[in-house]
Each structure stands twice: as C-alpha cells, then as structure tokens.
Length: 89
Image (cartoon, rainbow, N blue to C red; front, side, top):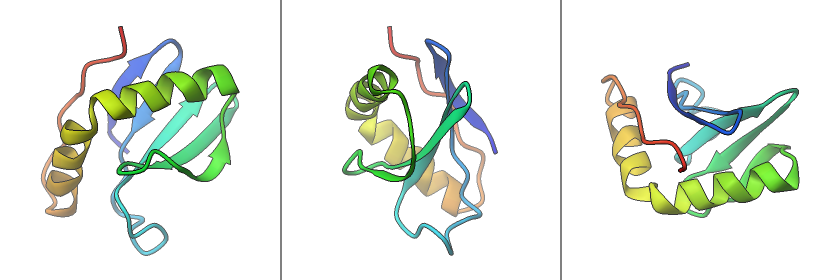
C-alpha cells in the first residue's frame, strides 16, 4: 500500500486493490493505533476512527488536495504508480 503523504504523525496511503470492498475513491489513514478509511470526494469516514484533532487535520488536507487525490485514484485504478502529495503545513 503506497504511502502518499505523512504529516503530524499521520500516514496517508492509497490502496486500490480493495475496490470490491470500497468502490468509491478513498484513502487509508493511520495514526498510532487508530486507522480510518476516508472517501475522497466527501471526506466522510467509511470505516474506522481517528482522534478528533487528527481527523480535523486530515479533513483540511483532503479538501486542499482533493484534485490531486482524484488524479492519484485514476492512476491507481489504471494500475499505474501513484505520486506523493505535499503534507499539511
């Protein structure tokens, strides 16, 4: 599962071989012992949980980088390598 960004202890990955489980574009977010799967277009949590302070950071990052995330998703579903996305600063 390629890591596309890391910031404030949060790791963002895009795993695209689980499309049978989650058909919509999504990312996997990990922070310490917590993990969540987040839908890209809406920013909604599909599964899991994050601490609220980290969730707010991820929400902001997804909103800022939505176009890049969707471009990565298209690459991923076409079997191409995804690119790194700038962290939240």
